[in-house]
Structures are given as C-alpha cells and as structure tokens.
Length: 251
Image (cartoon, rainbow, N blue to C red):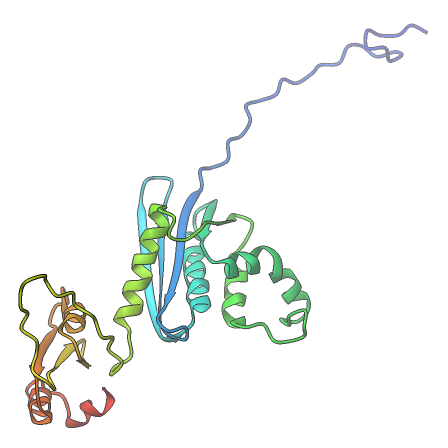
C-alpha cells in the first residue's frame, strides 16, 4: 500500500491553519493604597490613588476614630479593589507587609482552618479579611513596594491617609505643635491659659496651640474658631455658636 506525502498510509497532505494574531491582554489599572494611624491604636486614615488605562485618576480616602495601622492598610486595599471592580485587570500596590503576606500567602490557610491561625487563634481583623477575600479575584494582581521611596502614587496615598487620620482626631486630644522661634526676633506668646476652640460640621474641639486649630478649620466652609482664656469665655463662645452647654463636656 502506498503512503501519502505525510508518511501516513492512505492519507493526503494535511492542511495547517495559519496562526491568527495573538490576543493582547487589556491594559491594567493601577491602584496605590496606604493606611495611617496616630498612636496605633488611635485615629486612623486610609487612601487610594487609582490610575485607569484611559488616563482617568480616581482618589478615595476615609478615617476611623479608633483604628490600627493594619486595619487602615486593609481598608485601603478593600476600597481599591471595590473602586476598580469594573476594570478587567488591576494591579493593587501596597506598602504593607501585613496585607501582602495575608493576601498572597496566609489567606487560603485561614479559610481552610475556619479563620484560625496556625496556632489555633482567631484571625485578627477577620471581618476585613473576609471583605477583601470576596473582592480579590483573578483579575487582581498584588504588588508590594517600599513606603516613602519616592513613588508618586504611594506618596499621594500617604498624604490622603494622614490627612484623614489628623482630621478625625478625638476631641480633647489635640496635639501640641512646637513652633520654631525665628533667630534674633521675639514672638508674641499666648497668655497662660489661652486655648482655641474650633467648630467644624457641628463638632467643637479645644486646641492648646493655634497651629492645631488653624489646621482643622483651614479651607473648611462654615468652620468657626475663637481664642479663649477662661471657662466663662468658653461657655459664652459655645452659646454664641448655638451649641448646648454640655458640648464642653466632650472635649
């Protein structure tokens, strides 16, 4: 029996379909995340800076009164994944070793063990990890970067997170700011007992230094402030702002 040109008996030459052009994966969005906490635990903030393939830049931020740095890092990652949910691909960049380790290594074991660590203890921040796990599908690539290394997206997130952490500081826990004294010039220091009251969004705060008060009210529409020296002045100011007398009990 004769053989065909292919070497197979009784078969003719086989047609080879030419390869078509390789499909190009869609460009990925990039979302930078960061968290900040004053005191750890203490007032915290988180920030997201996302750059979409079409050139759109989106930014988000928020804060919590009682937080930890890990919670804020997680919240930033969650909101970045949610913000880019409609993107076919996204790279989320975090400078948190905690987030990187959890999402790339620890998470599958926690889920298998009923959200227990290898030591049998409940996973910390479990609710946030569950939320992140539901959003971290195959379209998300995770990338770690060193913080404060001059990467614009990371630096921007740090600014957003710190801004929210400072803005949500508990009432009555104002931070003292040391002001440098100009060389060879005198500076008018406030009289002993001088304090500053600020009113933002109906919430009053007391500040020991003008710099703290100015930081809180600067650029905020409708914000009010007043320098006071005595309890009577505080009460009069609170009344003039239309607040109940017991508002001073919470600062």
